[in-house]
Image 1: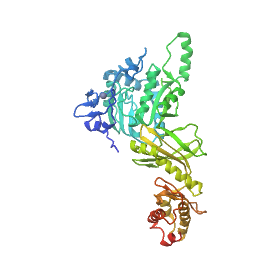
Image 2 (image 1 turned 45 degrees about the vertical axis):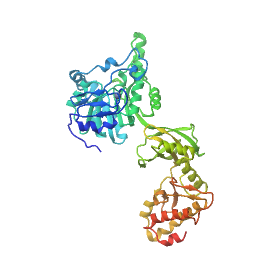
Image 3 (image 1 turned 30 degrees about the vertical axis):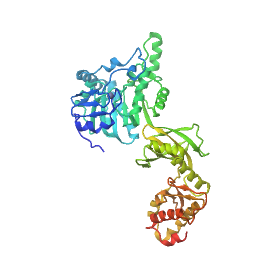
Image 4 (image 1 turned 180 degrees about the horizontal axis):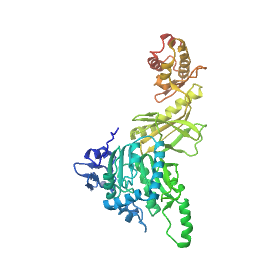
Length: 503
Ligand SMILES: [Zn+2]
């Protein structure tokens, strides 16, 4: 957690080291090293000057700087604006002076508030282009650390001196075509009033691509809608007067670019009907970029493709170094997704040769399911590579509604009267052993219970990651005793030995 700091006007060394491991060289994409007084690329040895406490990462240029052919129109002259503080001041004062600009700012504030309230609180947020910090007071409450970047150093210096918010801030210059941050390193990026200044579609596509590359959770971007009222009028007039068309985009175009870059369009409220230029604000949710190849698929979920993409969830049910669990709706089926992440090359090779961990798990769950032992119905498993999580394996199961873990259940039951209900669980365990399944991690955490007061509880055996399948019954064998010992240890505070003897 980053502590908020008020009225901070200078980037200190400490601030920069806070984001040091997120930074990357805008030229060669290598790591950046922050030493005393200098910021240097570890690979191409480029040094980045620090001017009045602001590191200058801005890399000017257009399409040819990211390996595409140069076009006639570029935004390079626009990039030269507001390098002087005086120009930046004149620009920013216009927003206070003119009624229409004040009105559109007000609407922008309201929309941003709505969009950001829907997302969870962020650890890091990038405002690019931040201009003179016009939006900072709106963004600050939603993040621990606000990074303000603009291509014009004049804007940054003006913003540093004139905007004060109760959040920790870091300033820098940066180009939105070459954002000096690593892939998925910043929770959220807000990019207001830039897209409509970019004359060529390649530049607009590059912008959204870069924003989605760096964002971990979501991107908010404004653009000038081709179908807006204002643009329709303009198009009608331009037929007569041959005026240059505006830098517009359609929602479909944005949706396609987003999908290509691992994003998904969530909502696009209208920013203004007739007022200012950017007429729509897009909230783009970052997906977990994973090309999961589906191998086994239960008949109840018919996936159209053999690959599946995941959403970055609002909350995880479990978030550990190795394992992530979250809920996701897959073709109207409420599913629980379990992902093993950062699998090593060796593990991937070994499992490809023999059997994947999730494949084993799905097999065990399927066997339980077919023998009518209550469990979470397995849907599919797959593996793939993911920008955020490296080599991953995924298992999807159907969500069992209204369940709690046995651990929670036991804390609620009345020891004297409710104990016998556990007998049903032990019957299931015996059945499981009879068909030759060793669970391997049979703790009260891995058993779910639906508890409705009027009926007997149903116990679901889940989480078969450690299981072994045998060809015949293991009842009375060492493996079965090991499972029983495991569950007995978990239950020892809740039941007497007689419960076990019953089994
Ligand atoms: Zn470099």
